[in-house]
Image 1 (tube, rainbow, N blue to C red):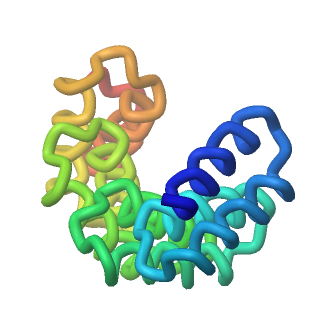
Image 2: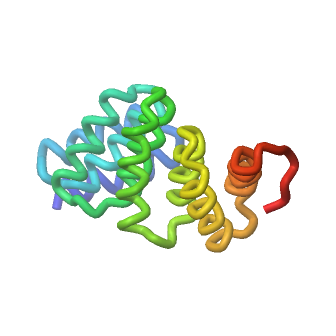
Length: 160
């Protein structure tokens, strides 16, 4: 009960931009209830926003150990790995995110962009088209699809 209160306070403080206070409340929630997956996930998000990526990775992994089907945690881990120049690790996380949340345009876009960066353009195109089916106004997915199609055809300026 106290854990949920601290977690909820952390969410509110985070939304108000008071991230250090939010971290304190997420940590208090975890002291009270160490297996509180949502608090691990929320703490990971705040740590990530502060650039503390290794700490964020550890918290996402703990959240996923407790609740393996947290698709957003897989997606966020993939984004961190992508930013660290680890595309294979990113792709593995994005695949999990898509498996768990097949209607996540963000996860399909991230998976498609990562696959495209490794030259897996056919599969990239499939995921990027799916992202646009789910969210037709997704500018990032549209740009990523243009890049993947250009790689696939060896030309520029192909319309999706």
